[in-house]
Image 1 (tube, protein in one colour):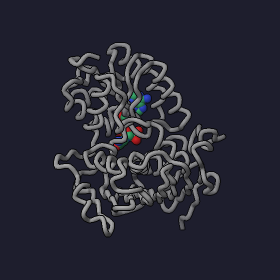
Image 2 (cartoon, helix red, strand yellow):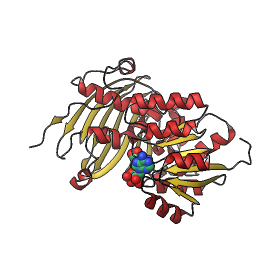
Image 3 (cartoon, protein in one colour):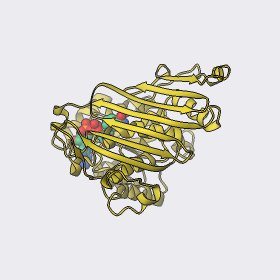
Image 4 (cartoon, protein in one colour):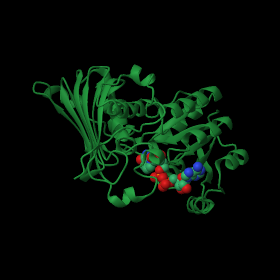
Length: 363
Ligand SMILES: NC(=O)c1ccc[n+]([C@@H]2O[C@H](COP(=O)([O-])OP(=O)(O)OC[C@H]3O[C@@H](n4cnc5c(N)ncnc54)[C@H](O)[C@@H]3O)[C@@H](O)[C@H]2O)c1
């Protein structure tokens, strides 16, 4: 695409997360949100009115046929992500799809294959990767400035009450695909993997401690990363004081980020180990701050689509965190046994979905 092209963007699924997409497109000077679609035409029209969007449709196929968008933003629940991505690629569009990219690895494989066959990009929204602090810390870790990373703790302690799970599609394997690990923990697990790279093994357990769900309301896992880091991961939907946090201890420092749904520089700390205090000023976060958000993610993706460059690190590796989550479920199904990437690639059940036994400890 030439440098003066404006991307014609279309969005499907005008629910809660779509507002973040509409704001992000509006903030990008070389993109126009030309049309939106939702199963409910009324919802689509109301959304179009609110954001000054020209056209509203009740189906993706009609929108693709009429609008010929360059990019489709998929903001529907996970179940239709595969089918909608394939339709968008067949119509010649790039796809930006909300997390989780698909309810199974098999479906994500199909989406990636369709993108490759069409010569189009598939970007997944994991906006926790964005922001100047995450980029800075990732750079420090990759350059070796902090020594080797050794041990990590990753927590998603969120609170979802009984009313949240009373919505019919929530808490069920068939309609939600997984529990709090797939729905909530995947954000922090994705950021952890963005910072530490590829994984080499996962052991996991699923627990039902309080909520009326089929799926887990808590999970615990150990992830070993290829570069020799051991991470302990807890994900919960039953924790009243909410926190999302990552801690990575390296040979020279402890890195922490503590936040709930998004982070700025104030959420990050780098604490030197004894003897490395003199190096600490070199690790300081940059003066210019950008918070994690949908806006920098879509900006970076649109920049790469317009320039023809590969997707940015904030939107590449679309399968890694879904694979880690799948491995937690696969491990739980095997009583907590170790699952490697090779075992997951050939797994007899867990490429097609994540349904697994949950230990019920409700009293
Ligand atoms: N990145 C984030 O921080 C974040 C936050 C919230 C949700 N999400 C993700 O975004 C996605 C949507 O979540 P939400 O909370 O906005 O859901 P939502 O229920 O508020 O909105 C989904 C919308 O999609 C529409 N829809 C459903 N099926 C459709 C279909 N086949 N064709 C057209 N429209 C259809 C629904 O009518 C609804 O308006 C999920 O994958 C969710 O995990 C991401």
